[in-house]
Amino acid sequence: MDRDLGPRDSYLGIALGTAVYDVTEQHVGIVSHILAVEELDVFDGLVVATVTEPVDHRFADADQVGEIYERGVLLTVAWTELHVPAENPAALEIGADDMAREGLGGKLEDRLHRAWNLISGKGNG
Image: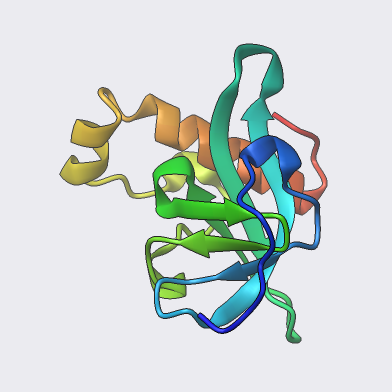
């Protein structure tokens, strides 16, 4: 990657509007929300917004966020592999792989629900 992303950082240092690059090193958007419980030092993931019209949002689960730098976040997957918030988060399709990764699958669904609430303006949970 030819960009100067600055020094490595943690989720605590991510600023809203930070550039996000997918696994192909394409600039896919900016950080629009950070889902974390700082008191417990738990990073859930990021909501990424496109910089083109119409604005589209996707949720990058914590394990889809690779390296974090002062001026950029590198994802471990392509944009198309990020979760798409649904109008009804309870209706999200969660497959066997998600359930195996998340135990009973509830954690991922909870994070997607929180992400949707942030995107839609309904609050933070």
